[in-house]
Each structure stands twice: as C-alpha cells, then as structure tokens.
Length: 178
Image (cartoon, rainbow, N blue to C red; front, side):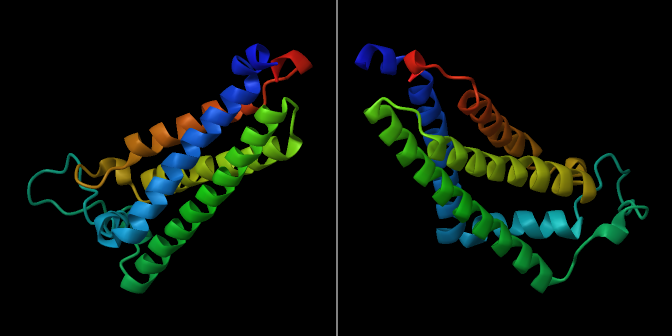
C-alpha cells in the first residue's frame, strides 16, 4: 500500500490542500496580528483615491467611475474585517480538510468528507481572490489603475494555486490511486 499511496492522488490532494491551508493561515494570522499593514490597502482600493494611472500630472481622477468609491471609514473598516473573517474561516476549513486528507491517506481509503471540505475551502479561496480582489477590487474599484495599491498579481497567484488544487482534488480516482 505504501508504494501505491506515495504516488497517488490522495497524497497529491493532501499536499495541495495543505499548502493552501498554510497560505490562508499565514494570510489571516498576518492580518489579525499586523492589522495596520493591509488596512491602508483596503482603504485606498475602496476610496479609489489612487486610480489615476496614466493621467497627466495634476489631472483629477476618472469622474465616470468615481461614484463607485467608498470613502466612509466605518464601511472601509467593516469591509476589511469581513475580509479577515473570510480568510480565517477559509483557513479553518482548509486545515480541517488537510486533516481529513491525512486520515484518508494513512488509512488507504477514499474519503468523500476530505474532498467535500477541500472543495468548500478551495472555493472560498477562489471566491476571495478571484471574486473579491480581482473582480470587485480590480474591476469595480479599478484597482488595476493604481500603481501604489494594486493586488491583482498576488490575488491571481493565490487563486490559481487554489484552482490547481481543486482540479487535482476532483480528478477521478481508482482504488490503486489512493
């Protein structure tokens, strides 16, 4: 069983889910313990006060989209706290999923609970980074126009790693793949 399991999908799934869990634990931990590091990022993106990429010197921000800006400090704080809560919940789901994958690997049997938990956690990562940061932050709040507060590249990396893991988790398995 060890030779089959060492190269099987259960181990690959376990490692990929564990890597995503580690990333989300570190992201959530960082935002909780060092709240002030990423708070300005969220505030500037929501306020859209740096979305002047390519504007001539002294020219104002794009009035056609500035109505989308959220300048209220309370709403910005609520948004940042919501992001941290989402990151924390995602980390918890992925840590539990990793434990389920480890149990499945050690037992040498498939575990639909591990797959289900991993799916939920990985979709939470994808929703946060592709949906929250790229779609909402990047497009709605025009983060892509900011040279100072643009997190699209990082969000894409995190979302892509989660997407890859999700694909591996859902590859068809056979008894010899476990």
